[in-house]
Length: 99
Image 1 (tube, one colour):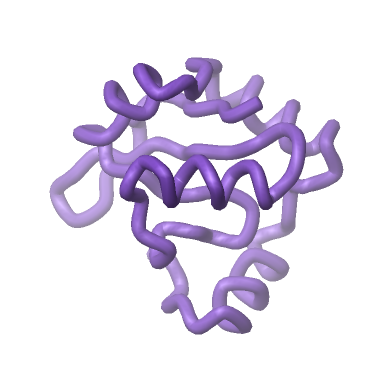
Image 2 (cartoon, one colour):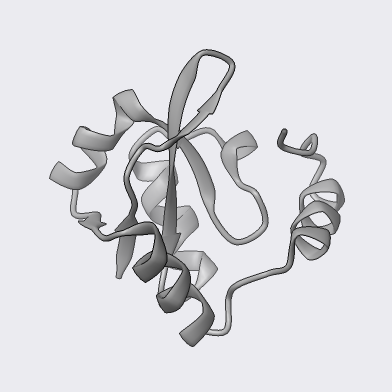
C-alpha cells in the first residue's frame, strides 16, 4: 500500500511530505513514476514530495497516515533505513543528499 503523511517539513520555502510503500520499493517507484514524481525525490526508503503534489497523490490512491504511522509501517515492512543508510543508497544511485 502507498502511504503519505502530512506536509510538515519546511525546506527551501516549501512544505514537504513523505511517500512510502509498506510492501516494497518496486511498488513505490512504480506509483511515483506514474504520478510524475521525479526520481531525484527518492531518499533511500521514501520520496520527499512537495505539498502541492499531495492532493493528486491521494486522489491516485495514496493513503493518508500520520508521520508516526508511516514510520511504523515502513519499519514493519523491513524497509526503513537509518539516515546513514539512506545517504549511502541515495549516493549509490547518483542523488544528492537531502538537506
